[in-house]
Length: 214
Ligand SMILES: CSC[C@@H](O)[C@@H](O)C(=O)COP(=O)(O)O
Ligand SMILES: [Zn+2]
Image 1 (cartoon, rainbow, N blue to C red):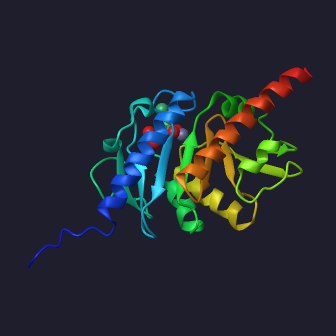
Image 2: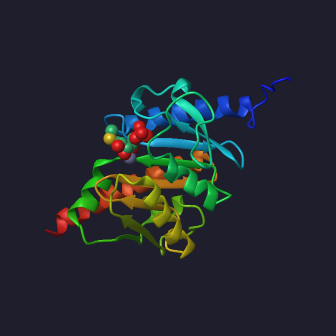
Image 3: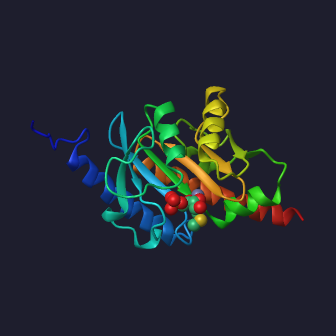
């Protein structure tokens, strides 16, 4: 019997994805959005597999060796322990065939906003020119509602709740987890990073506006 070494994903595509994830992760860490090994990042490889960060790695020193392959049922398909939050990435890839990249960060602004307003289950971003950084938004006269989920260590349950909210049309570009951070996704890593940068800018602006009001 011969054992095939062929993998159900392209090794060249995986190497390219690992490089892109590592470079983007270092950039995100440099912005202060991924302290103390927090955050996770991924790219779709094909319909059934994605490349995701290995759990617990320092995102400021991320290299290609900190990225591994999982299938869309969260099972490792290469050596390593995948991110503890892999289930939140694969939920998005399963639900949204057009999603190619997912980024999750732990910025001060997303943490402050969701902790300070424990009863606010939607963060509304409205009237900002930077909303045009989000795919499909073409004018500042737009409204982006970002749902806030309570934090939990039960990632499977959270993934189910997110999936239901998406099925109900309540989530478009991103969601927040209280006291934890944000998830966003897009059709490429470049678009996902642009969206994340816009989100983090707008979260910081919202914190400052609320301070001015007091
Ligand atoms: C270091 S605390 C943050 C973690 O609990 C988690 O929320 C996180 O974002 C990183 O988990 P990881 O398993 O490294 O992908
Ligand atoms: Zn996290």
